[in-house]
Amino acid sequence: MTVAMSPQAGEAGHSGVEIRSDLRVRLEPRERGGLEIQIASRVEVYYGDLIRRQAEEVLEALGVRHAHVEIQDEGALPFVIAARIEAAARRTGLGVGTRVLPDRLPLPEPSARDRMRRSRLYVPGSEPKYFINAALHGSDGIIFDLEDSVHISEKDAARLLVRNALRAVDFLGCERMVRINQIPLGLEDLDEIVPESPDLILIPKVESPQQLIEVDRRIAEIKADYGITRPVWLMPIVESALGIENAFSIATASPQIVALTIGLEDYTADLGAVKTRAGGESIYARQRVINAARAADVQAIDSVFSDVGDLEGLRAWTLNSRTLGFEGMGCVHPTQIPVIHEAFAPSAAEIERARRIVAAYDEAQKKGLGVVSLGSKMIDPPVVQRAVKVMAHARAMGFE
Image (cartoon, rainbow, N blue to C red; front, side, top):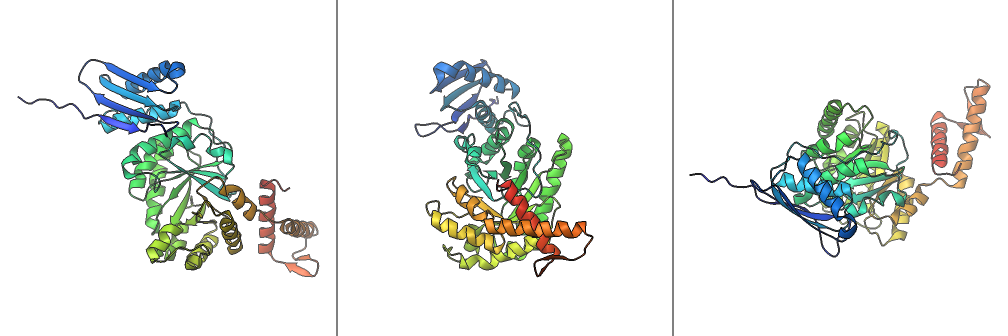
C-alpha cells in the first residue's frame, strides 16, 4: 500500500531579540483537523486577535484549510504578515499562483522621464524594518533591492515583501525603484513587482542590449495583462569591462531607459583592480558611461560610495562626479543623502548665470533675432539648453 506523504513544513521571516517589524512563520500542512494557529507576539495583548484574524484570512485565500501554524511576531505590520504567511505557504507547495494582496494606497503621479535623480537610497528587500521610514530621509528615490543584499534562499520571500510594500506604504515624493536580480532570475521578480506599478526598474550586471530587450518585453506583457498604462522606466547598471564597452548600445536598447549607471564594486573586481578613494582606476569607465548616456539622451548616474563613515571622502567624490557630468549617485546610508544633494546643487553663481542666459534668449526670441548674445559673448543653443536645465533643477531644489 502506498502511503501519501504530507508536504514538508515551510518557514519564512525572522524573529529574535534583535529583529523588529518582522515575524517568523512556520506552516506545517495537514490532511485534516482544520487550522491550528499559535501566536507569540511582543504586542499580543493589543494585536494578538487581529494577527490571528489576518492569518486566517490569508490562509483561506491561499486555499490552506488544514495546517499547524506557528507565528513569532516582532511587531510586523499587516502587509509584512501577509507576505510572510504567503511565502511560508508557497514553500510547502500550497497557494502557488495565488496572490494575497493588501489594500492598495492611491498611486502617486507617474514619474517623469527627466525627473531629478540626485540620490537613490538602497533598502534591502528582505528587511521590512527599513521600509516604513525610508522616505523620511529625503532621497529622490528609494531602491528596494532584490539582488546583492538578499541571500539566494530569500529571493522568493523578498519579492513578496517588496510587492506588498509598493501597495501599502506611502513613499511620499520619492521615486519608487526596484533593483531586480540578474537576468534570467530577474524576470521572475518582474512577475510580482510590475503589477504594482513601480516607477523604475534597475537591471544589474547588464552586458548586452539583449538583456534590456528581454526585460522590456516582459514588462510590456505584464502591463498588458493588468491593463497598466503608466510608464515603468528602466535604469541599466553596467558592472563589467564588457558592459562598459557596450554602454551606448545598452543605453539605447529601449525607449523606456531614462538613465544609465555604473556599479564600481563589480567593475573593479572584473578588472582585477583595487578600488581606491580617489577612483583613478575607474575614471575611463565612468567617463564612458557619461558619454554613452549623453549620446543616448538619458541621465548619467554614478555608483555608490561604499564607505559610509567617510563623509569627507564622499563629498570629494560627489563634487568630482558632478564635474565629470554625472547627475546623481546611489546611497547606502541615509547620512549620505544631504552631502550628495549639496554637491549636486547648482551654486548661486551658476543659477545667476543661467538666469541671465535664459533672459537673453527670451529677449532675442521676442525680437525675432536668430542670434543670442550675453554681453560680448554669443550664446549657442546647447548653452541655453543647459541653462534651462540648471534653472529647472534650482526650482526643484527650492532655490527659485
